[in-house]
Amino acid sequence: MREAPQPNYDYDVNRLVKAYELALKDVQQELNALFLTDFERAQIIAVEKLIVHRLSDIRKYSDEWSAVAMTHAATNGIASTIFTLGLTKTYEDALKIVKFNTANKRLVDAAIADTQADLLAVTQNIERQAKLAIRKATAEAMRFKLTRGINATQDLSKEIRQRIVKATDVAIIDARGNRWKVGNYADMLARTKMMEAHKEASINEALSEGSLYGRISRHGAKDACSKHEGKIVKLVVDAPGDYPYIGDLPRNEIFHPNCAHTVSPLRDPSKYNES
Image (cartoon, rainbow, N blue to C red):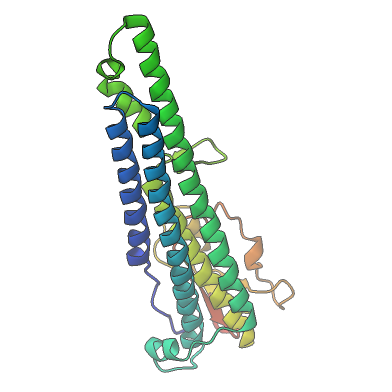
């Protein structure tokens, strides 16, 4: 069985992560600068505007990144299927003849929209936390003034400032209550979305070529994925044979967030084993 190169999206992912980390750093620097002032209303408004402007920039960047990255991942997925099915001599040749069928055009559009929406939620949370940090800092400073009769900035200690600024480094709180730092969440989200686009585009192309089966890749996984490595699966529910349907596999075991596994198409699964 021919094997396409294992996709590696580190470059794309790292670009996005770095952009978000730089944006967060800029936001936190603005907050730190504000916390050294007397919290005049004009200064607070000015800082909030700067933060909103900076986050607007990262939103535009993430929208552009999503469009390019999802298209790139889907292209690779299609090329993987073309090469694996023996339609070209090399993977590079497969990349040259990639065309998006209707299913993959819709897939890419949906992947772009979903990724943009998820990344928008990150910037919205940073903005929300930044404004909350300003309110908390202002309230603390006013309390110090009232109780101690001294300049607020003198008592807004380094510890308080660090605690308030640190609160902005939360991209999202998931269903389990885990607090994701911005860089970690951007990495997980980008990696997961690109691998999903790769896999789904590969499957769509396989089906368009009449291939109803696939085999899950192997790379020596140590987690629950290991029991699914090399497994032959159906790509559609009603395909003949006693193979599990890929859509029924438990997502906490395979194709989970950050999962690196792919699916290679098979025309006749009886010719291959799962070892």
